[in-house]
Image 1 (spheres, rainbow, N blue to C red):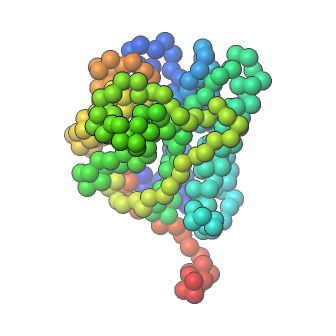
Image 2: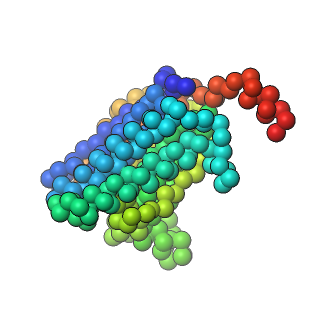
Length: 273
């Protein structure tokens, strides 16, 4: 099922004011509702190799799998097939990055964070590794839908910091999980019901470290009639606040709901389940 015309989107990335090159990578396949953002790290230019592998691998594998599989199935853990497809694609990307870093000396030590979402059947699957984030704006309530895999977040979880104190803390960038660091990685994934008029923001820490959540919310609320303007303003704010890192943002807006097209046979089975 094509989601064309049901989800508006825009994706932008910028080197920032300090870094010499951009190690972020973004990718979108709006027709199938897939959006991916990766923030690379490690070695000269190796970070952009890792983030590039991640985005390309995830998009290619998800596209191939979505085209051929029965998406109505669920696994014993309750995840839908789209969630499983997204998780497996990220795990495959991890293996490729890991083995590349072990076999190519110029890529030694590289890795990347990733955040991705896949819209399907009036739901979305959200997957992430590291501290790249996904936010949602719904009915004027703005909230972070992912929890960072970072040392700072662990300290928040243990009560050493409040979320408000964490936003102002230094040393935010010690991630505890990333693609390419180990041969296997745990991908955090969950599903959310989507509502018409929802806004979703995927971003690298170059945005979330430079702008407080309240200012992201205010920017979306002010310029929401033009997604590209929202993205440009967020990047401009990040750079105005110092632009210490590459900054990337993917904006999506649900303009129409997108229930899955079910065959009559599936509907009949549903009556007896």
